[in-house]
Amino acid sequence: MSMFRAIVAAVAMLAAVPLIASASGDPAIDTIGSPVSPEELAKFFVIMPDGEGLPPGSGTAAAGLPLYAEKCAMCHGENLEGLEGTGAPPLAGGRGTLATNKPFKSVESYWPYASTLYDYIWRAMPFHEPGSLTPDEVYSITAYILSFGKIIDEGTVLDAKSLSEVKMPNVDGFYVDNGPDRLIYRAQGGATSK
Amino acid sequence: MPDDPTKVMGRALLEDGGYGTRSQFETAVKARADNPNDMTSWSYTPLADMKGNLTPSGLHYERHHGGIPAIDPAKHFLYVHGMVDQAKKFSVADILRLPSITRRYFIECSGNTYEEWAKPKGKNVQFTHGLLSTSEWTGVPFATFARHVGLQDDASWVLGEGADAAVMTRSIPLDKMLTDGLIAYGQNGEMIRPEQGYPLRLVVPGYEGNMMIKWLRRLQVSDRPFMTREETGRYTGLMPNGRARQFYYSMDAKSVITFPSGEMLLPKPGHYEIRGIAWSGRGRVQAVDISMDGGKNWIPARIDDTPEAMSSVRFSCPWFWDGKPAILQSRCIEDSGYVQPTRTELIRLRGDHFFYHYNAIQSWAVAADGSVSNVHV
Image (cartoon, rainbow over all chains, first blue to last red; front, side, top):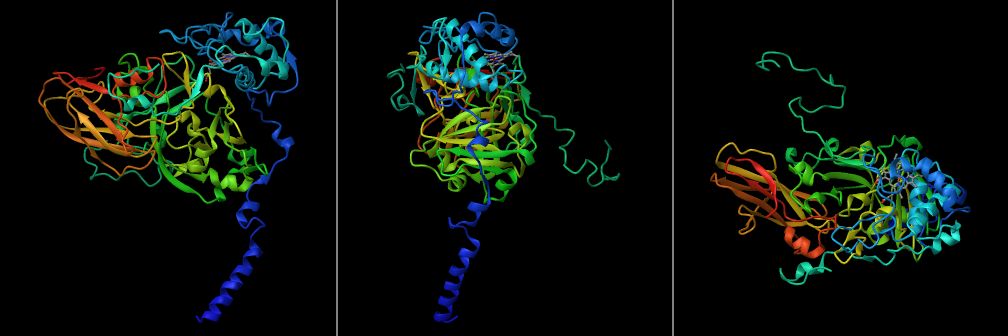
């Protein structure tokens, strides 16, 4: 091929590209996948520590007590202790044990954010009927669990605002560390972890 | 069974239905954990029976938090939204049309071997280390989806969400997602099994298994982590001072001898081929050492296949057993230079209550009668 014809061919190819390509320059980008509207995405949720994602509604521990008794106690126990044989973890207790040789982790003693409790109950509980609770029911049951653990007052009305203001006892109990352990690079018998 | 298979016709083509079955003499299966509730439980891969580096899909360990969902791929979508220019949903058919890659990665539950912190608990290698499996995963890199939706400037985290009864959620750093995050649909050459996430699974190579969201239906991009239950109340490591390390994602270098291992019996002194598996979630397995005397002396093992990043290798080492008690150990050396720690060292590093990410050297004691058991040295 002469230089001239090669250039003509190259230009022709370049010119042909826009015919099949999209504005983004990649034909696949606009033809694969469909745009979704906020309305379609409204069926999903995830709740952030600052309260983003919390639905409208409210609840109290008083309203939560009968709901908990009816929907949760069969597995998590009347005293939130977690009943053996169900696999359900305890939801209260263990404050002050994390630095001992018998650490007891529960929502009360270990979980850093109340938002996580709301999110998880709404998402996955009751275990055998996931996704069956209304936002008000979740606010009420959350209030009951938090007041049982003396994290909020019995009378607190939980809603999007007050829930995001709840300070969990162990909120400062975590730090980001993906390892590897720095100590491993110090001699055996040297410093131990704290 | 015919006495002589050369004297009778064999089984006809496709008589077994066209999918194929293993020999009737092969019986290894997954074993369930001793948990009260099979809907949120796990099963272990029979590691001692593995014949190569890849785990047969049907023997891949399982961990579910709400049972195995039944999902019709024709009705399943992956939504990608949040801090993006254009939120989109992708059908499974859409995803199958995108350019794909295929990689071998291990997946290990960060709870693998957790019972060994306190005492030698697992009777055999299936129960000590069986929350580990390796597959060839095929799928579309997250980066491809990122181009389709357009990431906004402050985007730094991605929530993965599953379509199971637990609606499993984890936050994954965007960096990781753009480095090698994979939206997988293929496992060992076929569509992913239901237990493993059919039709879509998020694969974040080398990270703890819990992050590899099965039945993936949604990726939400954000500028901060979501602090889901699994990354706060669970899957965090408690240190002796009562504070916990969070976002400890990587599965550190680890290895285990699968032959001889717990509950086996060596019939008599003589030549044996020690075999095992080594893996590392931060890089490649560089070398594996073997000790026959409980860690006093070490010799290099042979690596039986080609080490790949965030994958496993098989190793082996010839051994003449003189009939005297012996303690067999293996230690994995990663290409970074990191060496798999002893249990004493790991406890020095993390205390007794870290629970997850136990990667200490495993010891198998061979008694004079040839019986093999799990011990701590």
